[in-house]
Length: 174
Image (cartoon, rainbow, N blue to C red; front, side):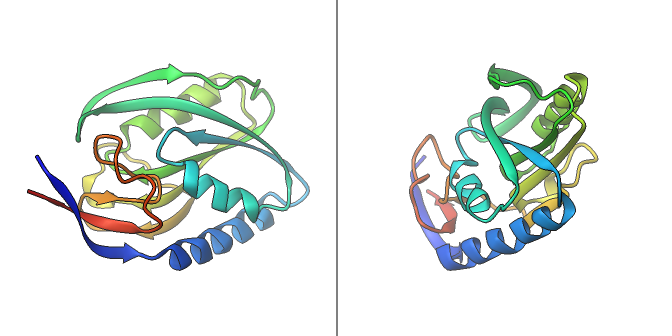
């Protein structure tokens, strides 16, 4: 299958402005508290950087690799391939995600961090596709809601390609 970039869905400027807006809400909600940001690799890296630059709170960062996907389809079985290095006991964990699709992975991660003694666990997602949800999950902080379409860029990939695009575009499959 060949993939090309269709139209641009969100420009770099739109995404950065949204990240600033979302981070301002996070700053307000966690005023006087500290945060433990957990980025989901690899897709959330670019969005996480934009969010972090706008957070004014005491913040630690870490990364996790967890997935329920094989290719472009969710298997429904979530595996943690790389765990965080720090201890989340008693901390406010904010999972930074590129896109919430079926919700399987994030449902597992919420349970995972709560089970490790986190004080609170919330989700901050760049994109959300509610029409694809298989589990009842809704990110507290969300950049954009999109329809059921395959998107690439700004960390999102197709077979590890297109992550470096400075925008989110619609993938055209040929």
